[in-house]
Image (tube, rainbow, N blue to C red; front, side):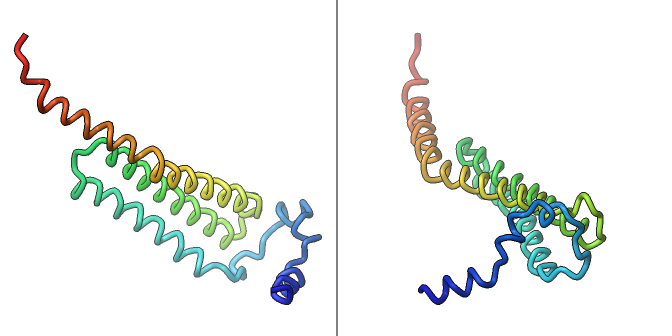
Length: 148
């Protein structure tokens, strides 16, 4: 375990990683090594977002708590996929300001925050909203037939 940690620490140059020049400097253009995995990741995000939206429209149909959750999740997936494709394009073409590493840091930070929010919502708030909606439907089924 200690040997693996030592290898990781030797691999990264932390002095370079914490310097502002590293985050704001011009990038290598099309020579960066993560081009293919990032394009694949971005494409998967866009396809996954479209699949979630189609699933929401075709399978779930009219169920407001799930519709609201899956619609937002699909839209955010498409937004993040499109934004990462734009960042990859700017880096590939060598646009100095729009290919800065700091934009990737903001992108990854926002991706993790939105992912955390949706995981928290999926495991915390969504079951409660489904329970409320089911009880509302049950009340409407039996209580709406009253005659005043």
